[in-house]
Length: 499
Image (cartoon, rainbow, N blue to C red):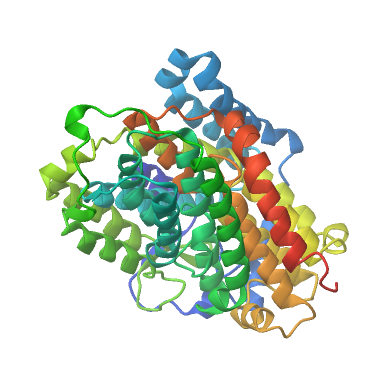
């Protein structure tokens, strides 16, 4: 259904064609403030900017639906649970339709809604395929739950996040982590899982987190992050691991039933190993992008290709991995589609309503006033703060564009991005490091900062863990534990570096 709406919007409102032949990167246009556009040459970029200027900017009041949706996500489960649980799909879609309709019919701007829809499809294709494929893998850890065992799992999972992404690692490990702690599970177990595996852990490779992958598509070398953020990554994970260990030491296990108190074998068994092949297909498909490889077909819109082959592969994997999954693994995981259903509806609302917020932020960040304020310190805190409440991938691109614009470079040029990453502009390596770390690390500040956060929450609640509310998560965990860690990262690695 999403594909039908998307293609209808494309056909109705813009010239489109499907390119099966090679698509030269030089033909791809890019305007720095728009998050989904990929590298292109200056002449094409100028054409697009002239086209964009024909559209009026979004008024500030148009961010109200986005704020309203966030407030309802935060308060619905607390104060009007029955209404919210029954009607959240309608609310999310209605608020998104209001914003998109205003863009199309009043601002005559189809470009931004189309790209928001494309980004949403990419987002939900990846999450749904990883969710379904990992749901068919049952990992049994017959080991006594101890603070040290939990810390080991969190650190190993954080490293794995760089190989299969934060989403893949989260979906693969959250159920075994909860089962390991079955007689002592508390909300903080899941929260620190989100902090470390669903976010901070994926900062070393472009596979790890969507913002870094978009940077890779723009021209940042694949191994740039691991060579420039390794120490910050290690420091943040170690601080969080120590905090978790100190909290977990005070957690006393509940008495177990007699049949549950058998001696531990300390063995790890895996059922449904064939689904690892499906996970490998998903990770490989991530790189099938028409903006990166000429041979990949794409739907041409506004002078640039929008991927569809990658998403078709991922949706197909979701179907076949479930169809042929081990029934024992599905049953052992208490697998259901409710968590991905909730994420799908809520995030279509978020992606639709956040269009004007991103536009206003991007316009200011690249204005004369905005670029004059650009330093690695302001980039760290501004990218980070907004990554906690907006999708961190477009936030990353908007502030990378602002950082480059302040140096006279263009985020739409692959050569400029590569040169920026190589340090050929004053302070550019530090700027890019600040944006990269902040986008990934701060994604853990709220349930909606990064895709897997909300899904991990939903899975935990489905299993029976009583998770904190939206504001409870921030007040009880993000502010007292995560924010001081991020402050220490800034203090040690950015604060005293020369501007």
